[in-house]
Length: 220
Figure 1 (cartoon, one colour):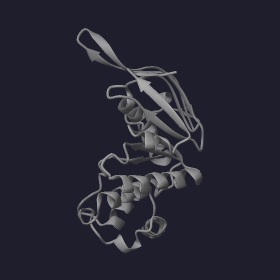
Figure 2 (figure 1 turned 135 degrees about the vertical axis):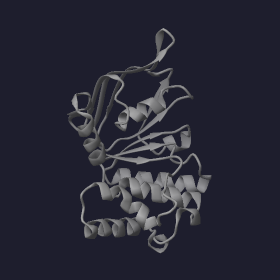
Figure 3 (figure 1 turned 180 degrees about the vertical axis):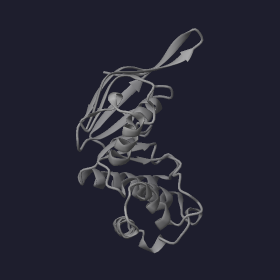
Figure 4 (figure 1 turned 180 degrees about the horizontal axis):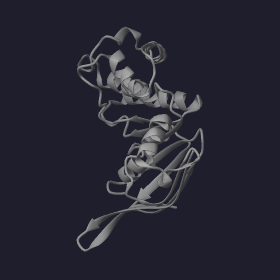
């Protein structure tokens, strides 16, 4: 699914440069559930931005589903991201002016699907995530856990093979967090490859592998 080789990310600092990531070698297979952990400043966010295809200012090799990302044009990277990646935010990022059903339809509107096809996928997602009764509610009418559930459903509604998550339970209480992590486990068992960034050892225990970063390096 993912192969990184000698990947490095640096930013200018004075007359020199500051490395945010150093010589990252990492392979993530299809079906993996990987947790990236490390203290603040370890390089977790830069790595996630690169994996998400939002940052092109790095060196090295990044292969995603057989495509060498560093050789792709910006347009091709965007198309690959839409096809391959779903993303779960810590802050939900739902659109307050849209209902649950309308929020779920947003990522489908960029995929050239007909209205009938979009509605069918939304109906399937509402049923799968047990949200049929909330389809006409607005985000402000939902609890934090319910909003994050919508965020997860939105991320996977187009059935991307890779799900990336940035502190997906950071704003939830323990019962809501456990519900989201159990949902991640179900998605993983159904074949979705998951990479989550978290500070939570409990969340990490749901995955099958932990990658620890410190000062931009992968700890051995």
